[in-house]
Length: 376
Image (tube, rainbow, N blue to C red; front, side):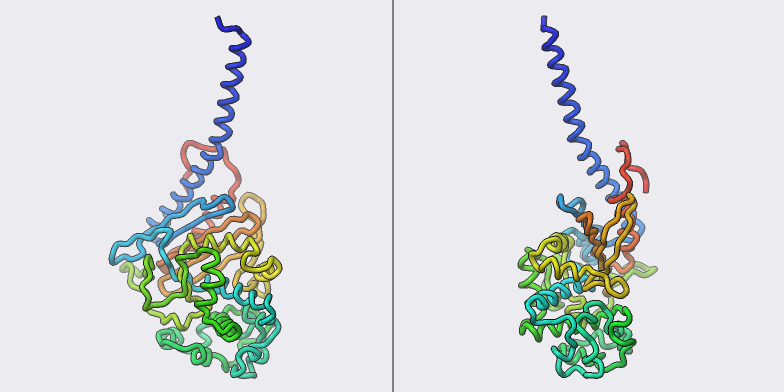
């Protein structure tokens, strides 16, 4: 007969092992349940025609979720994946702002200096008023694309060198006195790209590749070149009542530092992670990029503070990219070290609705684990 004390010892060992198993299984189950809920939500958006592209969610622990939906090329039946390269459009602005701040740290660019200090030919009636800060924060008074009549009907199709392109808008009357209002304008960041090239003596393409892409291992990110063969490049689509059609053409020489980068969700996750460190920029300069100015815009980022569904709050930096057939958004929850990235190659993808619903899942009030994921 087994002594009673040994039976008690075995019972205690069994209870300890059982509790330990439950302790370590519960987080895994919760994580799996959350992933299933995310996948169910995104599948519903895809099935309703409101999502075509790739999605990634990540935090300090790594990639929480990544998946492609729909087709990178409908005609050839090539599916979207986390490695598909999309035109990220105005998400490019955050890369440009970091390059500018690197030059500010070197003393080669000053935030309060005027455009004419770097582009002497720029008409002084405007250029002597507009500062680098005004360009970065969209407070220059320069209008957006509709500032130039017939831009999308004519000028966006034509290849330009930088000097000829900025002449399209450089002497037009400003919408307001620089520094007094906020007005989003991609021409601001095109000018910043020209200034970077003049200050460094290097092309924007070489600068962003050498200083950011190569340093972070962003091997699937590049300045878009329509003539270059790019493996895994997505085609852009516009959706009509009759279905998808190929997106309207745009010559990428009219985008430059305001929207001419192609990338993947995985590479943008590397970019997100790097922005928590001082690998590319000092913390002081980085924080300046994330400080809201007029209209809540920092330098290359929209900046705000949000109260999340669980009652906590977080500083949030985000940006949207929109270009014929491509619609993208990156949303970074700074105090949670969490990012949601959507790169879409359909202009009807509901990037705002999807981001909002994912936010609810990620930061919702904790619930008791259930056997089945509750319906959205």
